[in-house]
Image (cartoon, rainbow, N blue to C red; front, side, top):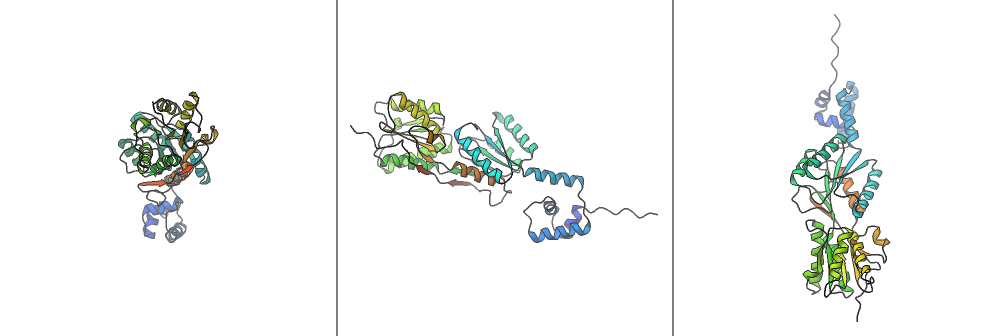
Amino acid sequence: MSPAPERKVTVADVAAEAGVSVATVSKVLNGRPDVASDTRTRIEAILSARGYVPTKRTRRAATTEERRGGLVEMLFNDPSTPWAAEMIRGAELTARAARVGIVVSVRQSGSKGVQQWLDDVEHRGSRGIVLALSDFSPADQKRVAKLGLPTVLVDPVGDFDTDLPSIGAGNWGGGMAATRHLLELGHRRIGIITGPMRFLCSQARLAGYRVALERAGVGSDPSLIAHGDFHHASGLASAAGLLDLPEPPTAIFAANDEQGTGVYAAIQQRGLRIPHDISVVGFDDVPMSQWVSPPLTTVRQPIAELAALAIRAALSRPGAPELPQGRMELSTSLIVRESTAPPRTG
């Protein structure tokens, strides 16, 4: 009678002998870094001594784990804006250094569109998610959470209650710095063109503007506050309304650079000169701010740094130090160019 075939060693056998969980053995088999070195050495020694041979299922799991490290998802409302373009550029540089790829998607309207995107994310086996959205419903947040992937929100974000970590710029301080610069030049009638007020960044930039005026003893005139949508056309239309006031502003703070180009157009249509007749300040410091004539004074938002931080967070393990808890803000800085000057006298 021939002896019974020797039973193959299983992951559970190795885990029991090593005194660890099955999940820990799986991490070692999959090459995961989040295992203590002494534990890893002990498990590897047992695997070798027992002649462990991975099953097809284990090999599939390892392949999935390797593939899961290869992609990071970025979801935008509109990836064609200058802000989004800079965000993608910064993200790609960081991802390339980490030898991972970026998948850029446009958010489709409705819950079905979001669910289809989430299904695609799961199918691709992506490792993390960066959400660069103006709003994301609680129901959609729960759908994202079910994937169990590191997820981070990046400005501009909407005003909604969320447990997701958020990375952004110091919008309040930036709004105050832009307004203070104009006040220091001698301007007192300073107009502002905000972004959509459902965006936290729009609210913060407007609040910074108001605080700077208040601290300078200058009242905030409601007629000098216009609400745009962060695009060129709204900058042009809003600036036209401000410039056609009986007592127009001597300076305009556009809450992003793209709206600032619209302000330039409205000023030029009226035969006025920047900064001789009116000063202009933007926000973001995207490349176009240096290309316009005259070059635009603006508040630099560290977009590339935001993108890099977001990608690093998306590549981290859930609960890892790299994944920010709550909200993390990076500071902004004023970049003075040629679009601001003291107000014209006489």
